[in-house]
Image 1 (cartoon, rainbow, N blue to C red):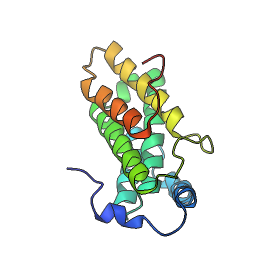
Image 2 (cartoon, rainbow, N blue to C red):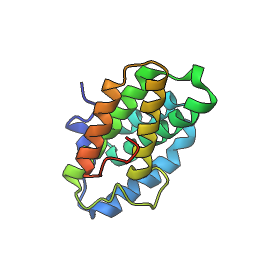
Image 3 (cartoon, rainbow, N blue to C red):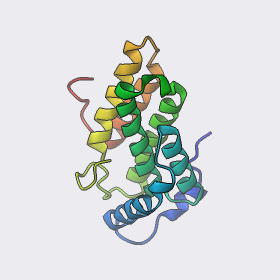
Image 4 (spheres, rainbow, N blue to C red):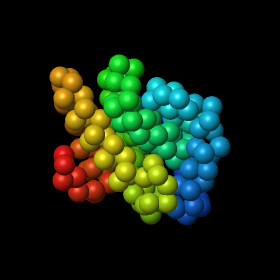
Length: 160
């Protein structure tokens, strides 16, 4: 069941798309210290933002969770959760698609924040490759990466 339900989409206001996205990033910055620590806690931050109808803030939580998952793949491999990575990937891809559909001028791929789409796409690919090298089937992760790339119109990274 998708967390991006009708309630979660009610945060789409009359402000211009980029201002809306930037406001979401400010809310993420304000709230992230309560959830910082692991991919799972960042996912919970994103899910809490969604429960408030804040899709913009939620995608930044999911992106940071993916970033932490990628870091942990090298420094703390035993503390990772494949299931959580799958959910993070799916929520992030769906969130970006939701934003692009409702706010087409919101530049989710811009470089104004480290958790931007291009950076996160590379982190997603890295995490999927690490799971593959560990012997895990990555079909679901690969589908989420491809959904994200398709929803943004991003080209497939050379190393994918």
